[in-house]
Length: 366
Ligand SMILES: NC(=O)c1ccc[n+]([C@@H]2O[C@H](COP(=O)([O-])OP(=O)(O)OC[C@H]3O[C@@H](n4cnc5c(N)ncnc54)[C@H](OP(=O)(O)O)[C@@H]3O)[C@@H](O)[C@H]2O)c1
Image (cartoon, rainbow, N blue to C red; front, side, top):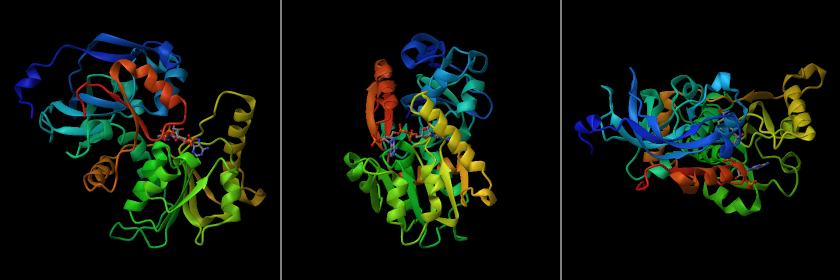
C-alpha cells in the first residue's frame, strides 16, 4: 500500500494518448509524454491508472465530434482500473485498488480520459476492486457493465419483489451475447435471478455465451433472429429484449409482439450503423420511425427504449459486490501494451471482439 508521502512524489507530467484532431484513431491520436498530471478537485480523487479499456463510443466520438464541442486536445477513453494516488480527503485511502470510469460528457467537461497514467475522477464514478480481480479484468467493467445493469434494472421491463429479487419466471433475450454489453447483461440477469436467458451470437462464440450463463443460444448468422424467435417463441414471452449490438435493422423490434410480453420492453443501446452507406442510413431512419409510429396506425404494440447510461454510484457499487462474489466476471477479449493502442483500436473497430479490449497502462499490471 502506498504511503501518504507518495502524494507529494507525484510527477508533474505523464504519458497519455491524446486526441489531437477529429478522425480515425491513427489520425486523431498522439502519444504524448508531456501531458500535465491533474490535481483532484472537490469530490474527486486522483487515480494512478493500471489498465484502461476501450469502448465503441471512444472511436465514434473521436471521428464524429467537432472541435468546438470536444475542444481537443483531450485524453482518450473512459474505463480504467488503478490505485488511489491522491485520496483528497475522500472515503478512499492512497493505495486503494479501484475500478471506474469518466462519464463521456464529463470527460469533455473535466478534460479527463482513461488512456493516461493519471486521471482525476469523481468518487461517485469509482468502486473498490476486489483483490481477486486483476486490473486488466476490472478495467472494462464500468461503462459496458453499468449499461447492461441499467438496461435490466432501470428500464422498467422486469418485475421485482420488495426485497430486491426478481419475480419468478422472468425471461430475457440478449441480442449479441458476445458483445461487452451483452456478456455483462447475461451474467447480471442470471445473478439477479432471471429464470431464463436466451442470447444470440455466432456459432464460434456459442460456448462462450453458454458459459456466461445463457440457457439458450441462437445463431444470428443462420437466419434472421426475429424469424427464429417467431418460429420457436419462448414458453413465457420475454420481459426484456436487450439489443446489445445496436442494430439498425428494426425487424427484431417490429416483430416483437410474437415473443415480447405485452408489459415488456425492447431496449437498445443505440443505433450503430455499419458504415455510412444508403442501406444503413435507410434502416436507421426506419428503426427510429418504427419506434414513434402510433399503435392505432399499425405501430409495434410494444414499448421501445434507447438506453443512455447515467452513472449511479450505487449501481457501480452493486457491480463491485457482484465481482467480489464472482457472480459477475470480467470478459476480456485481448490486452494490448500502452504503445500498441492503435492495434487495440483495430481490434475493437473490427466489431468482432468477444468482450473487452484492454490496454495495460502500467506495464507491470496483472
Ligand atoms: N447507450 C449507452 O450508454 C451505451 C453504452 C455502452 C455501449 N453502447 C453501444 O452498444 C453497442 C455494443 O457495445 P459493446 O462495447 O458491447 O460492443 P462490442 O463488444 O465491440 O461488440 C462486438 C461483438 O458484437 C457481436 N455482434 C456484432 N454484430 C452482431 C449481431 N448482429 N448479432 C449478434 N452479435 C453481434 C460480435 O460477435 P460476432 O463476431 O459473432 O459478430 C462481437 O462479439 C455499441 O453500439 C455501443 O456504442 C451504448
